Amino acid sequence: MPRRTQFTLYKPKSILNKHKRADHWFWSRYTAYPYLGCQHGCEFCYCREQKFSPYDNPDDFAYTIKVKENAPQLLRKALTRAKTDVIFTGDYQPAEKKFQLSRKMLKICLERNFPVFILERSPLILRDLDLLTEIESRARAVVSFSIISTPDSPHYQRIRQMERLAPPPEKRFAAMEKFASAGLMTGTSMMPLLPELCDDDANLESIIKWTADHGGSFVLASGLTLSDQQRSYFFQILAQRFPDLLPAYKKHYPAGKSYGAVDNNWRRTALKIRELCQKHGIKDRMPRPIIPGDKFATNKRIVEILADKLYAMELENVHKSQLWAYRKAAWAVEDLQQDIKLIYRTMGLKGIQSVENISPSLGKVIEKLLANLLNEQESNPTALNTPSGVLKFK
Ligand code: SF4
Image 1 (cartoon, rainbow, N blue to C red):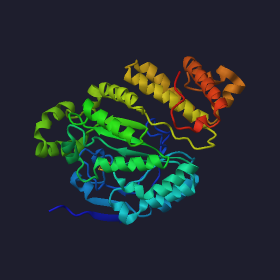
Image 2: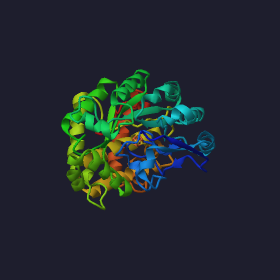
Image 3: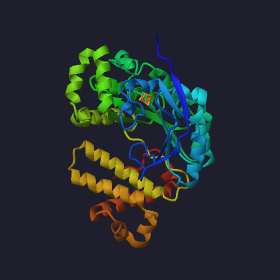
Image 4: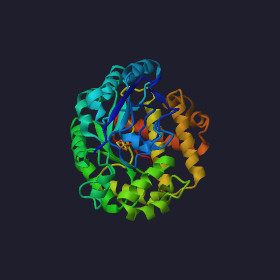
């Protein structure tokens, strides 16, 4: 007998989690989710880890859904005091059909002109295409679909077993095509790439090709993490359903270490993804969505270019000290309370180099980037708001 889902309604005290600065993957500064637990119940989901999960028994994660019934009201209040930036929100598990909290929260983002980023495994999100299109026209809206295999993938059936309660990837790709046709930036998050099942070249190429063919402009990827109770839960699933995979996973994820597979194999996988993205004409980084008229647009573009370079350097296995110089410079520009263009115009290179945590050599790099951006802007005044990633690091 399939287990029945229980919904528990409650009123949390807050809904909007604020981060010090936007992350370098999804470019979101805030997160706000309407539900705890997920009916899609993907076996690999990190939300079963103790630090995220309100459940003592990881089995409850997919069947006991906690509904934040006052989420829209809390969001409206929180956004009156928040600086405009990207909110990572939305959750289109089946509960959304009944409670419609994601939709109500999107209405508030629209009312307050906040850009949104949504990462989704369900085509139910198409129901809110109208709202997302409106948000895109005023602020920005980006939808990324979580997809780790296609019907062409060598291990499709086994991978589907790992996310068997979620709608199939073909439906997610069909939804992606509709968002792309409506003019929204969309793409795929290959998260998590399960070792032994998803990280072979054939699967990677298949997802990237399907993404490009369905109007997606980027893929993002990350490996699987397994910690505490989620590690035991996942190993139990493997033992029951895929015992042949258990020895390899025990090797990739020794007790007490969460990121074994990522550490050992990630660079090779990420480089392959980069090569395949180039072949199929899309990016392996998500372009940063910038709100039209944002007075810090130049700063944000500079941060995006520095973050792209930082990622490329990580793939090239550059020394950690160089990575840190770029990371700290990106954070320093993100934290600036002034338009970096004005600093440069009034004080030149010295002005940039005087910003805390920007080293003299990174100051010169930023000076060059600014010169490129300003040239670009002269020929195309909307260049800073163009989410095309055309302003490359030179
Ligand atoms: S859809 Fe996402 S949040 Fe839900 S179980 Fe799957 S991985 Fe977790």
